[in-house]
Length: 241
Image (cartoon, one colour):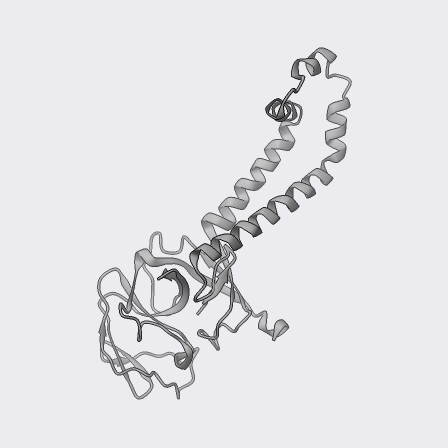
């Protein structure tokens, strides 16, 4: 799936967590600077009027007499409470939306093709599994060995997974993947797996070009490792090729 650069942003199968942190920090700083600029432009007139308002007594302004940065901030806040509250509200909403609830990514590898192509943009929910458990077919993201992965859930706790003649068998029955896979897929695996409690078994849709549960020493992804669930993707590969 989504081996990607995570734009809190994080996804690339192989990018270290430190690198992802740096990317997120840079983007956050850029967003903060742009936001402050926009707000200042929008409220420039309001700010000027606030400082020149006739009903602000000279004594009141003198009482603020900012001598240092802290006093400047306090003075600004007292004279522009509404403006400051708008900024705070914006950053609270931004934090909830981009840090707590959702994450975003751009696919950098072909491991989830043809479902998610290289350059495709994905929107993911970090709260998807607060109440319910992962289900077969979900596309999830998770961290392992300082790398970020995105794969499709094929097996859930208690499932017995086998591979025969290009098909995945779950509990003795062929698992229908016709919605996103061609019939002639090489699974490159002859092992049998039994998924333990609170774990899932994951595969990339590009079975011949994905490193997933078939090959890992610990093939199972625990619930604690799961970071988010892919909600939908935007096919940017149609633009960027």
